[in-house]
Image 1 (cartoon, rainbow, N blue to C red):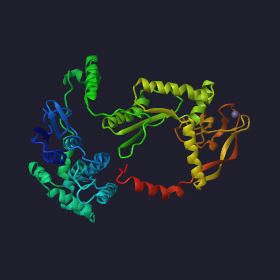
Image 2: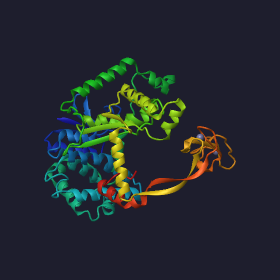
Image 3: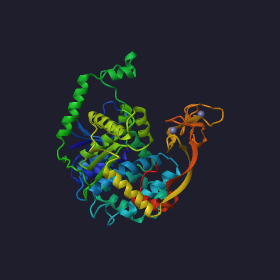
Image 4: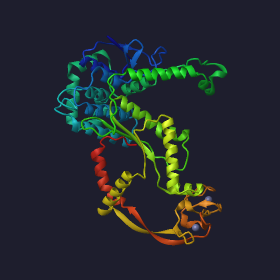
Length: 471
Ligand SMILES: [Zn+2]
Ligand SMILES: [Zn+2]
């Protein structure tokens, strides 16, 4: 007998109860208040207690734990993540009575996507109900059973309606609905949201009155022993999880499995990475990659240095090295710093490798051969002394914006007034390398013909991204 803790009217609890019915697990429902201070950490409802002091606090994970995918696991995983990343957040906002047309049309496209994918009236995967069906059904239940929402959203989705009513009438679903009462419409979704924001916890070893309540003291309250204990607990728990596959290199896509490709923004080679680079760029991707590997997804996490561009050239001039030397030097610095921070890239490469060059050139040639490139003549500054066209950052002069007159404005931006600058409009322009005045010349540049590509891109987005969030 397992205990399921939930607040009243929370549709996420249905997921766990129904999954329990399918796996013939006895579940004892305990209704609790969201402000109950005795709730287990991390104080998210509903949660399932699977052993003393061991709880699963994500409803989808708990449902999956009770009733794992029976077949077509990767497809099932797809639907579960689709529900948690796209469908559920959308419905919660709409259930909260947000009347935005974008949200509405996003939800309708989600329902259309479901309608098109229901097989034999009974499942999204096959001819038998699976955990992904249970999860999605539970989230839709209050929406579908609300007369207003029903009229607004479900019109014409016959397969979806048949599926919803058929599952509702089956025994495993009915038993769950009789155990926990779920109302229809917005109030069920506010119970769902409230379950995620339960009573704030009081940090250990931290007095809540007086001077110790300041954030600085909160940081100091964590001792080295506590950090080590947390690290040990984390590592032990990870090694105790059974059934995690070893990674096989090179990581290649595997048919029939969930394949996840993760990248983070590529850093330029003009700086030594600092904490901001780690936090703002690679850390969140690393956390997600670790999560993804723990889920046994076939995961590839790649990144590398972006070595092309004016940033490299300027840095090379500054340090008196060639661009190649700058790239080699800073690639090593970036690579070793990320490794030191234990960022788990499967591959940390460079944009200048022969493989990358070949791929990029093939893309360019394909676009060019198919008529998607255009040549246009643009005005550009040429330094006759250095015999080179000057990219934005290689020209300086007096800011052209009215009333500014800042003397050292760059060809892309003025640090005096903060406004963007068009290089050819600078007053008294000078070459950053030799300080001689450049001249304006025509130069031919390649442009990607985006209007011509638009219909193809739109077609691709519609085909490959049903139900993507509107952001
Ligand atoms: Zn200015
Ligand atoms: Zn020059």
